[in-house]
Figure 1 (cartoon, one colour):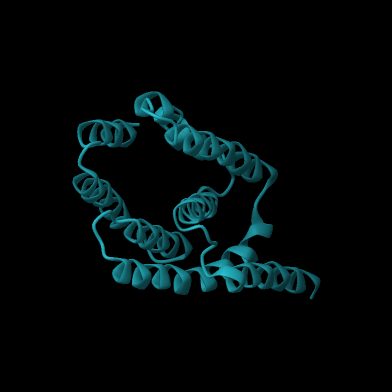
Figure 2 (cartoon, one colour):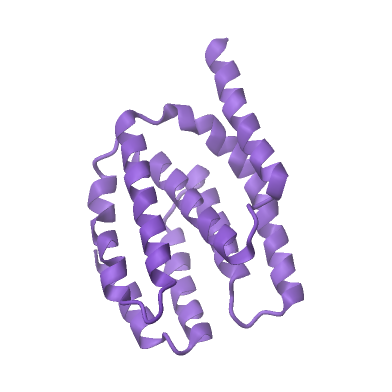
Length: 184
């Protein structure tokens, strides 16, 4: 996967220049978003960019709060939609999410170690695209995985779940709405 190699190269080249690295990585994300049509995946990518923007290294605490508020505002409707869509996932889809969820936990833990070997830590992501093609609903799985991944980043950096208790409640409502629709 060429994009993983490009990201690794950027991280290695700019690890001592956090703002330059942030700009480069954001550029990759914006470029990839341009090809995504409207729908759940595009809305999730917008959420991901908002989370990414909330961790920009040089912003003021006031600007960071504005960006956190934006993430929180995006989280509530996304939780409703994702909660309602989760029932559509097949066992194969769920297995992918579980295994790649474990990869994210491992990667995030490894990146927090002193002097992490970024190339080695991010190497598993070279298989992501090919494994994603093996699921039953790749776009939905990607949307759920990205939302989970960026929610984890948000929690790790900001110490709270996007939209807090409202975020949890909206996910619960989304799950229950899907249950009610299935019963009718």
